Image (cartoon, rainbow, N blue to C red; front, top):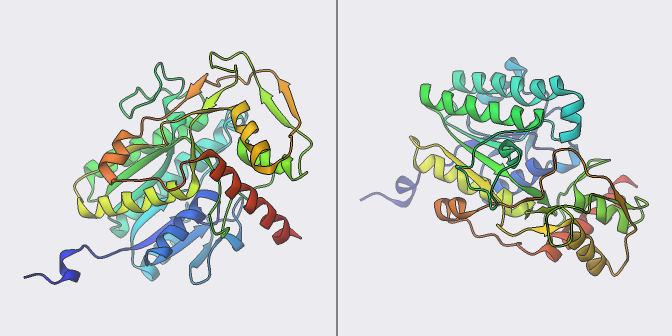
Length: 340
């Protein structure tokens, strides 16, 4: 008869790339909370030292530095990677596409190559709903054609393709998690969205509520939605981090299996609904400025989360817009104290 330790796969040491950034730092917390051995590599271009918890090794450097990665894998005994490092601003990707193909695609290729040589068995990739482009139908399923409309989406889709091909050729399985609109902050205010000048709507709105911005721009009011503004599927960052841990467990349990799954709630809110909710949570009124549409913004983008719920038994704990906003607001207040 197997004892308990023999019946469960051992937890490998996990390297989190971009672990000093917004989503990566929450994944580190989720792993640490469950007793995994975790290390972080981050070049701190957009990440913050304070986002990495005590007791977690932080290697300051770049994921295309093969010698550094080789040393990390050896020192940490890395068996799995959660890959968050990269650039994420869609309009910037249109203005500077080569930056995105370098940071998101070429650097991912370098990381994957060193990981294969080191025998890393599991790879979880931070992908995006932007790989679907302008889908014809909503909610969006994983078998929806992936037709990106900007370099950001293409740079992520190329990495998905590299991982699929690598998994077919080498003993490494992978999971691509396609995020919809990530928002909120750790419920205990241990981490949150800290980047100055961030473009995420809820981040922008809570900054405006606290007087850090003069207003919130509403880009377009003539979409085919109930109130004319774009509708998006907002997912709490801690629920997303939990999905990464569940995905890792699934990869370990079935080493021959790779996965691709949407990460969202299957429920959309318009820009005006989000701003109304921020007003409600803060008991304030944010100044809203109506501006023209941005190129390439779909009317609505909502996930079909059936696959991730069924495959991983993922059960979100914070699927409430007011809760997401309240956590984002609490972090924004703490961030003001951290920055003095």
